[in-house]
Length: 110
Length: 114
Image (cartoon, rainbow over the protein chains, first blue to last red):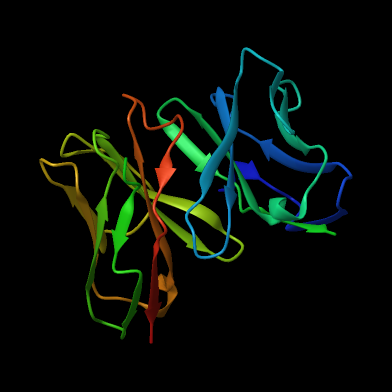
């Protein structure tokens, strides 16, 4: 059961533009959400997180937005850089459970 | 601090064999979780150990098992390997009482079953 869905397997953007990665979840018990970035031959690395008491969290070029009513979160990267090219996983946790999405491959073209 | 290490990095086995993968968490981290990553499926949670006890378990068959030692190092075992077990196996450690916050991942073990 896919409780966390990333419906876009891939995304391509031009350097300097905004990248928007989306994630939907179904379990209303999830109350903490994370984004991880994964380069080939490396494990995922933590990028940014957000608690359900917030609707936005910002860290430099990365901003995560949470819409609890829609059970939707998104990661915005502005401006996008070629080094951001990677697979991005969203994760949702709560009630002693954690689920990951299938990932979105972001390609930032110079 | 040294990061999460996993050994071996690559492994080739044949159907029916068994395999043991090892994970050393970041020093001081007591929680270790294991995940299976396959194309299109994302990270599937296998199990989590905390202070040598299995605290949570995903929806995998009993052929998948694990354990954690007193130094927090963890091993994962898969018996009677099947072709579908070919995947990247990742372990992650956490320093919080809850493993459901930020986790630190190792580079993974790429298992190929022939």
